[in-house]
Length: 364
Image (tube, rainbow, N blue to C red; front, side, top):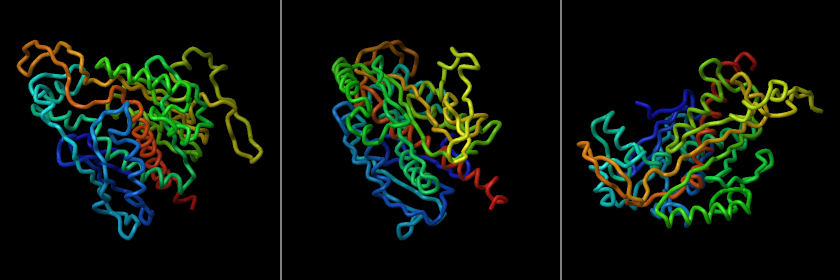
C-alpha cells in the first residue's frame, strides 16, 4: 500500500506522528555489517525537531531502539527493525483540525481515499514518518562508504529568494553543519536565518531548495528502462513530505542550451579512466551512473500548517476559517537535508546490490 521502498535493499516505514511511535523495517541488508544504535542516532539527531530556534519547538529526543536484525553489533541478514517512540505529543492542539481541513495539507485527500484519518498532528502524512527513512539511510550510507567510499552531502541551496553560492564538488559536511540552517555559504546562511525568524513571527512559512551531491559513485549503477537511476532518485526524494520539484545535473536550465553546449565531452585521465570534461548530466547518462558526481536538487514548498487565518471547509463541506495550531517548522529546509541524503543513500545502496546481483556474478 505504498509504505515499502526499494528492491533488494527494501524498507517499510510505520507509525503516525502522535501514535505510540514510528520506525522502519529494513529487509535485504547484507550480513556482518557492523552497526550500532549510536551511529544511527547521529543521523536522527540531524533530523529531529527542536534542534534550533528556526525549527519546530516540539521536544523529541528521537532515541532509536534496534529491535531485531542485529546481534553482537553486526547485522545478520535478517529484517532489521528500528523503533523511535513518540513522547512530546499535544494532540489537543489539533481538535479543530479534526473537522476542518488544513489548506494544502493531506487532510482532505486522506479522507477522500480512506474515509478515515488520524487527524492528530497529521498522522501518517506528517514529516515524522521520515524518521524511519533517515534511520535506514544511516545503514545504507555505511554500506556505500565501505564498498566504494561513497560520500553523500546535502545542504540548503536556496530559501525563498536567498540563494547560497556552493560548489557541490568541494563542499564538506563540516561546512554544512556549521550553522543551524545548513547552508555552507556562511554569509547567505545568516540572511536565511533572519528571513525564517521573520516569517515565524508573522505566523507564515517559506520553502526553498535542497541540493545534494554523491561522490565516488561506481560506474554502471541503474536499471534501464523503467528503473533508470535518476528515475528512482526522483521517486525517492519526491516521496518526501512537502517536496514539489526535482532536478538533476543541468535540470531545467539545460533546456536553454544547444546540444553542443550541453553535451559532456569525454577524455581519458592520467589513470586511464574515461571521464567527462563537464558534468551537465549530473553523473548519470542513459539512466546509468558514469562515475562523475551525482548532483541533484529538490524543491520543497512552504509548510502547509500556518498560524495565519485562511479559508477552508469542514468535513461536511461547510465554508469556515482556520488558523493552524500546534508546533510546525516555519521552513522545512534545514531538517529536510538529512531526509534527502537518506533517500539518495537508499536508492544508491539498492542499485549497488542490484548491479552486483546481475552483473557481478560472472565477472567474479
